[in-house]
Image (cartoon, rainbow, N blue to C red; front, side, top):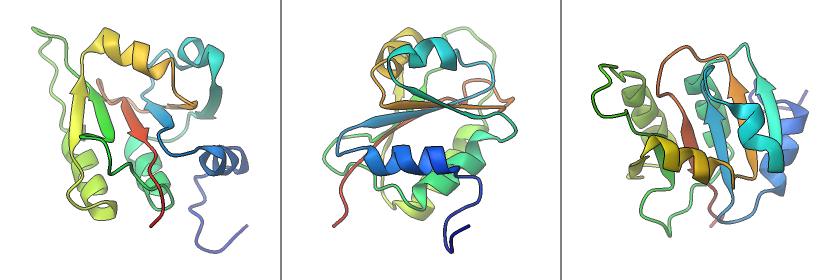
Length: 143
């Protein structure tokens, strides 16, 4: 155990976060996200007993977001016509604002999101039950 490190961040995930460089991305997937198949060419971390908001909050305590891109945080857009509500996005906005004030959150069309996710440095599989709760973070630099 270490002081100041959220206990939800496993040694494996801490190593991955440390290895990532400026511009690398990490995906936090909900329980329906095809994490294993998306992560075929990257690293898969399983955090099945946890939700995306708690994982996001823990990561952003340590992880700088990229200030050189328009939106270093991206969400999967709701498919047009899908009657799904996304109140979890409001939670994400509060968490991002707490750690990285003023950071813009973007949206990526569902199938394009999958393509972007396939290029991620790592994918985290959670047990999140909310729909469209997937998120991509792009790493920045410490200043």
